[in-house]
Length: 201
Image 1 (cartoon, rainbow, N blue to C red):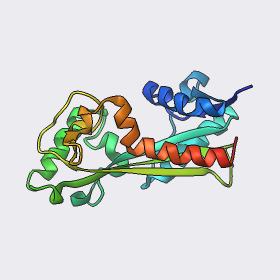
Image 2 (image 1 turned 180 degrees about the horizontal axis):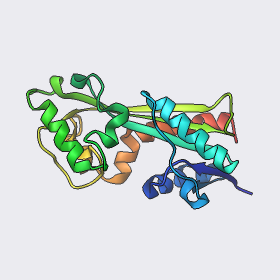
Image 3 (image 1 turned 120 degrees about the vertical axis):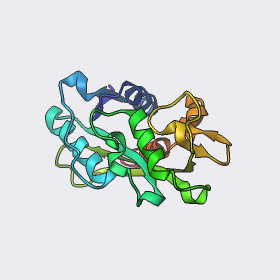
């Protein structure tokens, strides 16, 4: 019998990705929306605190183990911004186009790869129950630079502006398989899977 795990997200792509990764461990991933769970507040200044808040919220509402991730773009010249506010960088309602436009505006005075260094960061947290004193925490980073204009049609968020010098492509120009192999979330999930194999549900 498979073990059930709630994903503290309503993102269909994330659910599919998580299901594929966890299926070999006999874990069935259920999005929180399928169980009538609303989104948690994310008031914290760090990725790990927000991911933990989301996982605890889903576990408390369902009585099942829960997994959540919090991720975003950190730009060195902006002191790590947009950071945990990546999805809402340009305010509500969330808009990739407005977020990208604001990022380009804030970096307009900077030229050269070194001045435009950035990385994506992801923290994934798994709790066995809402009061789990020892959550499994894993993270991953993906380094690149910010382009002066968008390139590519794939991906989402800041992908069209995120340049990978070693590949000479933007994240939006990568196919999904390669992106999942290289990305911050892919790295965090691999770390989580390694920990789950040692500490099964």
